[in-house]
Image (cartoon, rainbow, N blue to C red; front, side, top):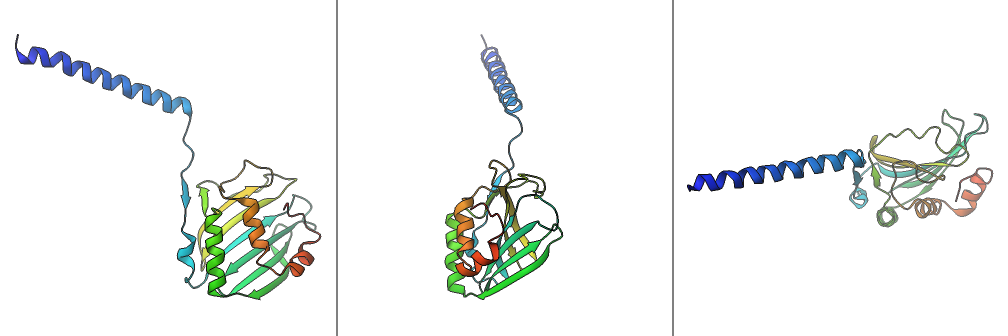
Length: 194
């Protein structure tokens, strides 16, 4: 018996086993469905000394008539903290208050957000319109000047959106960047969900 007479069945067996394994892997992938979009996370502390970098959260109140609809946006940068109260669906700012900030405070805030997974989210649709109509929608963003580094969203209804961080803790941290007396006055008639 020659060596190639022994090697041929062994090679044929290995190729057969490889094909069976490949078929099983393909079947498992097909049955499990499409994989979710990958999770990404930006290192927020890299933006501490970046001019014009800011983080923001937008709280979109329940869906209702345009005249009564409200949103609250809080934006924090190395130079200022700002709260905007927005009327309607076209984004008319009806009240804005701005407070000075500094690099040390901004650095601490970015570190806090980093630990709360502010920048953790999945790639996906950024259109949150219509979701959770009786609750709130939240949009978490990082801008570097006019460049949107990321925007993720979630809702108070749970299980919706692209955001994967600690929503309630992050919302509270943003609220704490505004003097509480002003925050309470500006948001007293708006359902914020926290």
